[in-house]
Image (cartoon, rainbow, N blue to C red; front, side, top):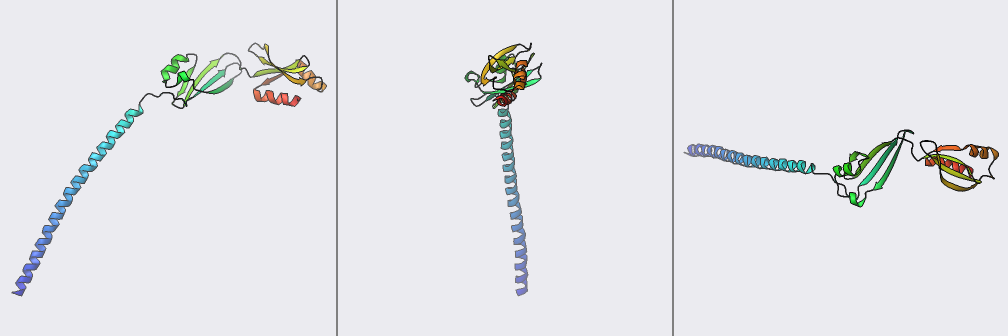
Amino acid sequence: MKKSILVGCIFAAIIAGISIGIIVHVYNDTNLEKATLEEVRNANNLVEKEVNIIQTGTAEVKTTPNTKVVYETFYIDCNHLENVTEEIKSEDVNQNESYFINKYMDWDVNNFSEDTVELYKEIDGICDKHYVVREKDGYIAVYNLDSDNNENLKEVTEIYVQYLPEDDVELLKNGIKVIGDNELARVLADFE
């Protein structure tokens, strides 16, 4: 009799174990389905947010008060490129690219962003960085050269010619052609 009770208990334990295993398996599958459904919902939300990000990314770009405007001018005759960077003008703030295309019709808009607007144009002629240094009324003077090699007085320095060596005086009588502000400063410094 004790054997039959023991066998019955073992049999009941096996049946209970199988039942508990089935219940746990069904419960886990239900949780897995819930988790999978939740992951699908989260993924859909992420996709919707990403679609929104893409849509807002196509918003029109406009200038801000911090935008810099770069004017690039290429002078064909002397092959020089001049870059001038300026703060944006107040009337140009909060404007789009088509505004700049219409306002600056002489210029090409090479780059347009919230940070920088790059305007470019080409000019027949030479830039205003071509100089001739020569003597004028006993002083060294600086002249700008134009496209036709006409000299336009830019400034008269305080450097006396009479104290310079004869070779330098002869060079100044013939005129010393200089290109660029740095080179002009160097040449003038040599005479001081």
